[in-house]
Length: 398
Image (cartoon, rainbow, N blue to C red; front, side, top):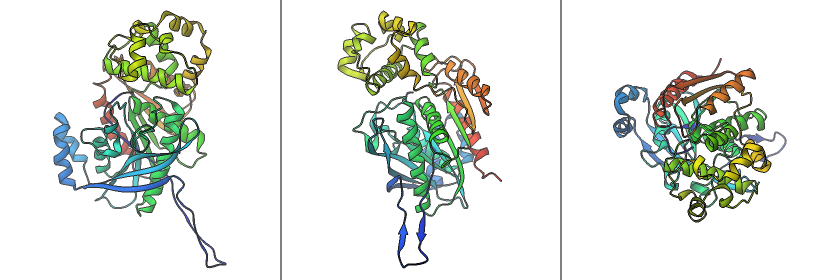
């Protein structure tokens, strides 16, 4: 859901057909990739010096994983928005410069961004793009999509925690990455890994689900490492409405953002005064997600809204929320779920119910609870988990 730190990457290709019976050469153009821009190059030692100060106590150990310098690219690609319109979106791609042979690919998905200038393709230091750069320096091709609403598509509303609005562009980004890698003459070993934390965890899961259920085998995920995502939107809404949760300003802005996103995309068109009490409704109407509210959703929501949700009297809203539940399905690839048990922003129930539902369907899924971890303190455990899983899975399968 919100700003946090982490990273991930993606795939597809371009083919040349030569006719044996004529002099015509037919070139199949890239289906997704539209442009590639080299933004910068970081030599190995310079990169290590740059990131060392932000790695903390384990910095010297983590730096041992750095094998290469990196090239930083911004790509644009064609995808579809939630209304079915063809749009141009963008993302960051990072290529190791000092590792020979075929390479694995990963797509890292960023957490909630309130500042458009923090989008990955701007390569702003001390954002999640730096973590993507680190993963690339370990010898992996790494991509990080900006998402719709940032970068090349910044004039559009971001479909916050909307399954289709994150899953389809995420899959298209990976396919554009595959096309780019082939154009650049870089050999990809067909290993695809996904990851993300908070909104990034939701986006990674949405992309994984979209790839397996919508692309007919065009891409194959090897492993997804998802941290603290709100995969079970229905249960999360009911818990926050009835039991309360975090009252932190940034967290409330996320809850408001999700509500406003679904209200618009699904044509619910309820005024904010239906969802929220005063003075909160007026604050949200005038300022949107920039509203300054430091009271939990349980206290700011109207009694009518809570009663309608609890008693099933607002089926259109419940259906909209359920359409974005992505916890109850069977992934073919391995999934590892990280979540702090004391997370009051994105409740632990999201990973717990996903683990139970996927296990019951026979999926290869692991739950790694971080005891007493909250949304912020769990990030380091998640990052080390991504590093371990990507390192152990990046070799091509025999």
